[in-house]
Image (tube, rainbow, N blue to C red):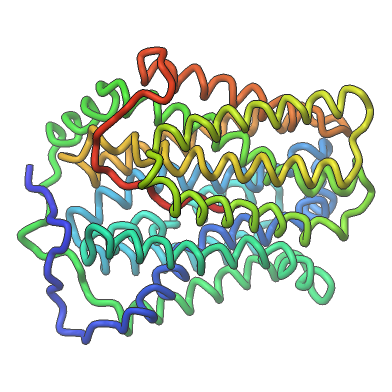
Length: 422
């Protein structure tokens, strides 16, 4: 199987983008996914009411359906971009994203909306293709710099998206939110079509066969470290997705402060961004295992404290925001390094391996989130307890990966990646 070089020469005659334009374009491509989740949060209750959803918890499925689509789409788009090139696959995905967002806006039933949301998520090619474009053009410290700068720009979306959604609801119907998604996707499509050239040279394109894919699957699922760190990411991501899906209900039904949701949600995103920046400053000196294992133990400790606070009846808005922000900060430092360690053993099939790991993490995390979300009963206990259980399962996975020894010295060269967003 042919493998791609870390900096394959471009094949298109289009002039190269300036560095800062490239960073912002890649961040805009990746932001189509975050926008499609976070801007929806203020509208979930309204959608459930208008479309006749009897159980308010089922409104969370609007988020879950999209994430299931994203996970499945990662598997498809990653393979296709390795075979047919980045630019063509990216433009096809963005076009489908615009169509699916428009269909969501036109949905007349809740079940129909969920179907189109899955398609909306399936169309999110820009995330996996964006990472591939960076990999094609940069390597080593230059790649790390691009990834870091892209994440800083990307972080703006989860900070402002809920407020954007709320502002749209003040002046328009909830369906207008989906039309904003379609408009944003169309703008990114035009930008990429006009300015982004093909980055994968023909000689580095894969010839995809069943045996190649099966071989990559055996590597990803057969390597102990790759498998168990992927499973650890999966359950941790499930706790994050449960928070995203439940946060609107928590602020409205538990604290009766629905208007505070956007700024408090943004605060958690800021904590995640700061934690990722801090991780980038210390991980080369301290090591991924020391940082991530410490962050995971802190995650478990904070979520256990949160469970105790709720159980004793001490939960208030400020305790929820503080403990959840700290939880998300620990999540960011743990999972960002888990991702790098999961990729260490699969370097020979990095493109397909990343797609498979993304599929497992996203779809499995959506199922974990659905299990946590359906337990909501008017308190924050399901979220806190679900996060604690996720942390404990992740710890078990890490122990299996490291042969029951935390902070095990390791001399690999893989660099930590930037952490995920809310």
